[in-house]
Length: 599
Ligand code: GTP
Ligand code: SPV
Ligand code: MN
Image (cartoon, rainbow, N blue to C red; front, side, top):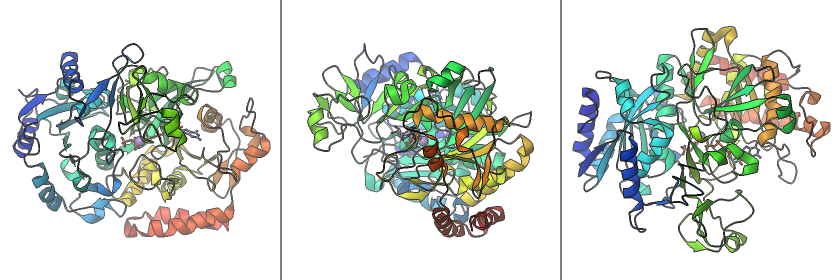
């Protein structure tokens, strides 16, 4: 029985039923009884089922579940991700494109009857607090209970989303997902921005199938934002409470697995805590930003949970993330400690379980397996944890208005070029700073790891339209915001020494850089003008309490190697040229100006 009178929803769901021919259709109301029953069903599956989830130690990890995906299905697949706009130019040179008609024709046979003998779950959800003027509704149909249970954590899922949509609106994103045979050769993650539609097939992993996340909240939403004058960005949102009690809000865009969750949940160093600084998490991955009635830029986190990278998460590196995944969390592709039915991953602690199950499902001796070069957890293994579990979740997390943003920060993994921090001269230059971002690739996407690539605004895999038009949209937003626009910065936690070790301690100590950033916003810190932007005076980065860092190290972290930067400019030129006449003239002018300042 349908859960809504909305004829647009019902008509579309009927079409999806006719196409995929499920044996049964279940509308997800979001009730505990229904979720409990689905959990019961999925944990009762035989070990041989690839859909199986396992319950974990009820005392140590109450309400937690464990799942393994196929080894060929452990990350986003950028080469199989498409933006299908009527005109190729509207998808732009950085997206895979196919004509929508052709793509529908190609995929329809793959979906035809794909749910025969299976159940279709119809999942209504809201991205953003229900009733927020910034929130939007999506409906995902899927043949996976894993998807239902994850969507329950990641979104506001259930009947309330339909109530919010109302009985007549057509403004909802239609997501069709089938795991099909999890066949990598026929795996497609396809977006039809002009139809508010997403089709995903032959994957059962995270970002490929939780369609509210990257597919909707970034690719489709970025396109909507362009048309409706708001922004969807791959950004964390954090609040810093100053000793005076004043709150400052910062958004930061780093590419996948480059530190968003960690920064969002940062615990300030002792010296800062003693002074009264506190950090609150609003979001760890995605921000939707819109100009508010007072002219400032406001952000909401459209998500309701964290789909976080497990490896490297420890009580020391990210206490708040670890606390967040101690109950009602789903773990994917981590290792099992069979002695007590708990989870383990590289970097959790120094004691890999002896009686372990590695992420592919083999029973192994953990320490021996690692000594032989094996990894117990997949590098992109993840936890899906409810935001409400997070000890430092912001009191504003559910505020429908969002939070006013003071600073926008860009950053990536750069071993040499980018300094620890610099500030852009103004909004337009800041847009350029975001546009010329580059970062080393990570395990979050299938393919080579550690290769430097251009990743503008950390949106390369997530921009749902022509990136040239996206930069133009940024420039337009800057015009609208005028002197109320957030200040724009760039950071790099990943500079390395000659032996390849990270120089900056990172994690909680990143507070020391945020400190300079918010002081700049308040007009309380000085800066030095350099060819690339404003930099702190080395002595203005607080290094009190850091044993390995002295003023000379800070100087080194802030140094700008002009020859490396000129080399980077040579790399940016052909990248910009790909956009042809869609490259805003302002971006080309900014590049020439940068070169002139460096020369
Ligand atoms: P996605 O969820 O893929 O978007 O990733 P993310 O940007 O949220 O990255 P996350 O915070 O999960 O960090 C990814 C990896 O970077 C982890 O292995 C962290 O330990 C490491 N990392 C995060 N912050 C820092 C830092 O300040 N310094 C160093 N050296 N490593 C860091
Ligand atoms: C990312 O890759 O940036 C993620 C994980 O946050 S996924 O949802 O798989 O995209
Ligand atoms: Mn992400």
